[in-house]
Every structure is written in C-alpha cells, then in structure tokens.
Image (cartoon, rainbow, N blue to C red; front, side, top):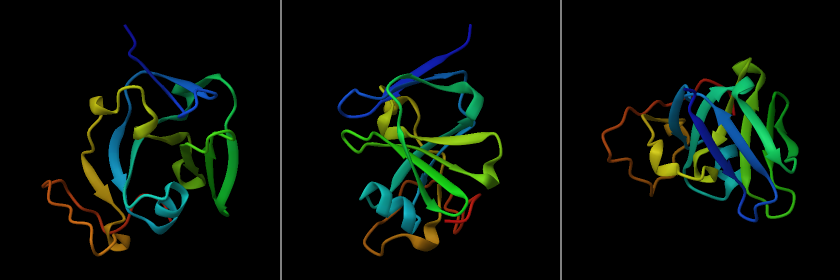
Amino acid sequence: MTRTIEGGCLCGEVRYRIEGEPLASATCQCRTCRKASAAAIVPWLHLDAAKLSFTAGRPVEFNSSPQVTRTFCGRCGTPLTYWTANYGPSIDVTTGSLDDPEEFPPVAHVWTSHKLGWVELADGLPCLEEGPSSD
C-alpha cells in the first residue's frame, strides 16, 4: 500500500497530497529560505515531484532567483514548495505545512555557512556548509 501524506496552508485554501515516501528531510539556513519564510531555519521534505499533487486551490509561484521557483498560498502567505532546475524531477515541500510534521524529523542541516550567529545546531545531525542547489 502506498503511503499518503497530506498538508496545506494556514487558511486551508491550498491543500496537497504526496503519494509515497519522501527522499529526505532536512533544514535549510540559506539567506533566501530565511527571507521567503521569515524564519531562521526552514525544514523541508525532499521528494519526487510526480508524487505531489494539489487537491484544493492553486499556490502562487514566485521566482526567487533565475533557476528557483517557490510557491505559497496567495491568501495567507504560507510557503509551500521550493524547486530549482538543479533538482530535475524533485521538489521540496515545507515540513511545517504538513498535517503531521512530527512524522518527518530532519536528518541533516544544509547551508550552514549562511546560518545566523545566534542559532545553535546542537542536535548532533550532520551540518553541510552548502546544499544541493545554489541559493
């Protein structure tokens, strides 16, 4: 049986479904993720883009850099996805927008070279100074 993971934005206008297991779960400290979310750290679930479908509403797209498209709810502003041309057929979904984010703890921290000085990553997870894509 295929696993189904669901999530959506704060106001409920945009809902999505992921069919199957994600590929990875990590946090990002890069400058653009911080700006796009107004948070010091953004947790992401990395998955095959073909496994993601929107079941209610449509997110708004924003090109935060030449090869990067982010989506968010146009009504409440919840950040939902991140895609870069470097990913090919993969996409990231904000872990915080999942109905059950506790189910997907991160396995690593990426872009720690951009980490804010007052953030301490003391959980013992691997810390990568960069990530799989340019910010």
